[in-house]
Length: 151
Image (cartoon, rainbow, N blue to C red; front, side, top):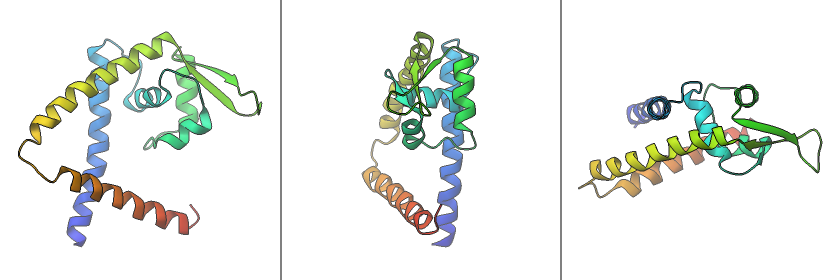
């Protein structure tokens, strides 16, 4: 089981890196060349509405990136606008611009195309739900352990 566990953790890491490559390719197809994959995923998590930065950080993990830096960079590039939240002036809310909405749509269009290809690639496999459940359980074990260690 230890070899299978190690292979699985390496696969998860490779899949995340490949996801960033795929997102970057979708941006390139849409002629958006000033974003990287992490920044695009951050924009997708912002979505169409404004969101507090704190909530954005809680929604997703941005492997190997500094969320504050990327939000500042996205603001500088014209993808986000920032404003203090009403209830706490120290907290910041980000609002997607039209430029951001174009990038978000490019990533979402790619998701639709890949979801279709993924469904075709899974034809004949009956245990995809099991795979998803196994990955969720792995996430739970890691989260639970990190919670106990105070991280």
